[in-house]
Amino acid sequence: MGFTHTDIALERPVPRLFGEEDRSPGAALPAAVQVLRGRHAIAARRDLLRELCRRTGQGGAMDDLDVWLDTPTSRVKIPYLVLVGPRNPMNRDEIRAVDLDGAVLIFEYRFAGRASGVLATEDMSGERTVIAPAAVRAEIAEIAGRTLLEQGATVALISLQGHSQAGPGHTTNAAVACRIATRKRNLPRYLPLAPTFEATLATLGAHTRRNLRCYRRRLERDFSVEFVPEVKMDLEEFLAMNRASINVLPESIAVWRFQALSRIAAPVFCGLRCTDGRWLSLLAGRRHPGALDIDWQMNLAGLPRYSLCTAMRSFLLEYEIARGTRKLVFEGGTPHSIRHSFACVEASDVIVERRSPKAWLLRQFSQWIFPETNFLRNTWRDKSLQWIDS
Image 1 (tube, rainbow, N blue to C red):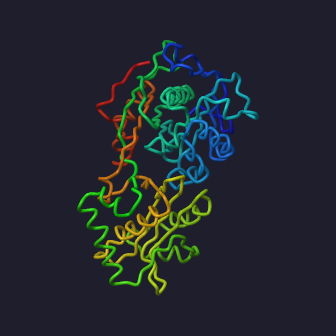
Image 2 (cartoon, one colour):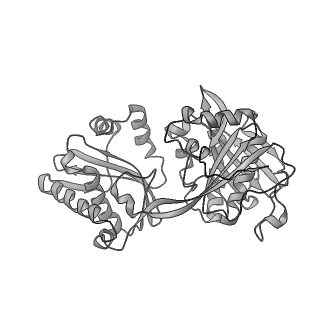
Image 3 (cartoon, rainbow, N blue to C red):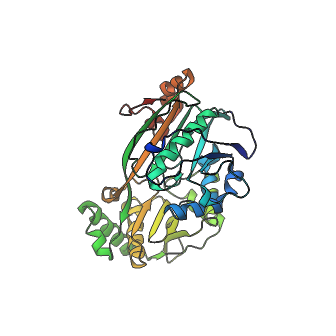
């Protein structure tokens, strides 16, 4: 891309992409944009982003910003933060949340170690991608996408919470010829928890309900097991558990997971332990008011008839319901049958693509460039997308 290697990659007025009649009532036309490049530059704005989240009703979305920027998948990409605000020029030293209309966090893929100009969200729900009032999120996403293309990007896929009410903006003075598409999704996101364990089980399918009870009873019958809400162990013990688990992680990723627990604002690290001290299952996540986000679960190998994954979730459900948790979020989803009882949330995708031979070639060959499950690949090639030239 055309960015420099400084922290402030770009700082300039935003072109008038939208007429006042196209905007939501009361929304201020953005007058300036600032693009920051790299983990250190973006992490330095953590307090600004947390305050912006509070103002837009997205509290908690950026509480663990440092961790999101340093995940193994994010680490191999280049992060960008696009700040869109009403001030012109935007003062980089004194900017406050009240000065902003919104912010977009997006990541650039590297191909063979080189910046590719292909950018996409790291979060399909959009909760940690577009921070802005609901009425203007789609517009902020489009402004960010166009700005990135003007600086050399080939395509930018930006996901956001909620459904955009309007289609892509129309402009006759775009600096770069591009085409834009939007897509709405209903995303199965979380398990609602009732006030009691039994009432929650009653909301699940018969098969799931039976398994949650059956595998827990079997485990309790054959092992002296206890649920430990706050696990205490050192790195070596954690790595030993990883090596003995069903799906062994590369050691570097296991180390990152363990060390990330100390960096999360409100971490959860719980497990199932036999009285002889042997760990059968570990689970980690993050707590928010009234909700628990589950990041991963690790289960001991060699005990298939006990379905440790299911038994652990039975214990967890009972514990979390008792402490007042009302939502159980599974980051990245889950193949477990419990997913059939998830509540859906509204999400949208805004994809901005440069009209160029390079973009056309990348889209045509994306099925060979990206893994089969890659979100950008599958969105980019979605035949239901309605593109608008701009």
